Length: 78
Image (cartoon, rainbow, N blue to C red; front, side, top):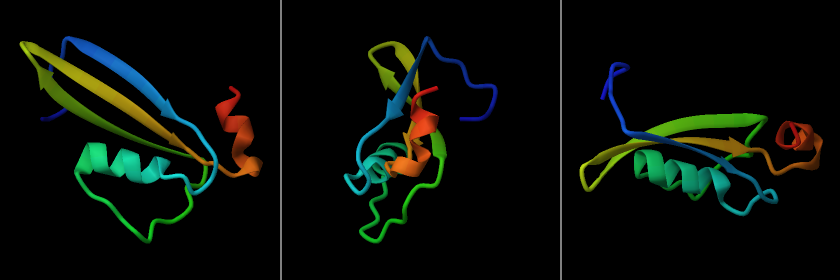
């Protein structure tokens, strides 16, 4: 789907949690159907989208993956 895709609903999801619990792999699995056992630490925030069909509705998920390290905590408190 290109930038001119249409959808009925948009859900914005922010993944937060401690470092190393699998937030980045959850994002990667849902948006790209990939899983990396040797994933790297997220610095700041990563963003990805996926549009899914449910019944007759197109639903767009905008997913934000946040860093779990304490030094990046200010990003999740905004």
